[in-house]
Image (cartoon, rainbow, N blue to C red; front, side, top):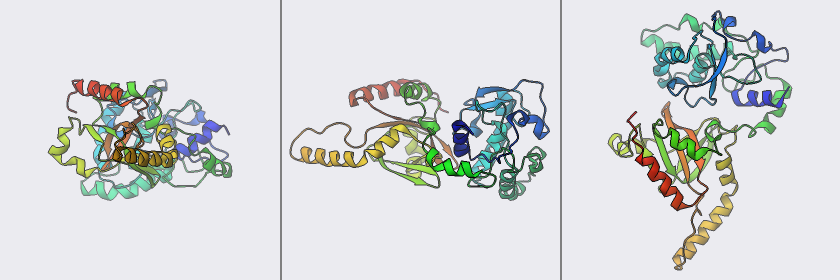
Length: 341
């Protein structure tokens, strides 16, 4: 088994026995949907809101529901956004996106279906909510369409069924070898922040007060010195209008417990040294000395979106240049004529 495939198992929790079906057998026809369009791998569009922050950026078209175009997938998926907000099951988004925007990986020649157990878990959790509003569980989500855990498929979170001893043995050493999606643009991060600023509902310039792992995700708590650049699709003043700033005291890095974020990890590694430097700066300031820049962990630029009552990071870039350049960069961001989302 290749290292790439093992990384895929760890990142997406894919279940596969040693006799898993070969990639050539995967795809829409196995679910009873057919299409004359040749399968291609495309970036997930920003308009496909259902699958923002899902942890990958490219999807197969046609998807597993037989939608031939990105536009069709976006239009059909929009109807399911309200179900995500109901929080009826932790894997609702994972299940829906595995169908509407199936992950595209270069080692596989087609999309990977959700496991039947994942479908059943989400169905059992969400049917009572849907029934209360007069909606049945749709036939296109009929769980008998999906493979059991003995085949290559995406299982429910935390499910171990079907994973080989080799995969489990290597999981710990592979943890951290996959870069978190929000942190994978370190080289061109500043450019990416600038290009996506107007398209992101939330943007921040921040220092971190604490970082902790909660339920497999990483929770980032900004310090009071942090600054809101964009809030709820508008300017920072909207945070006061809607009382939102107090409602979100942290940002979340999805699956941050099983992936690495270079800028964040390097900061955490040097935390003790930086704390020591911070104490030194405070002593110098108290004694009339000049405080050094960046002694408190450094600045971060972050973009985020609201998901299930949390602010989930879509971009996180650690600023590596001086404060003067940062101020100039922030001014350029805020001068962009961004329409309210």
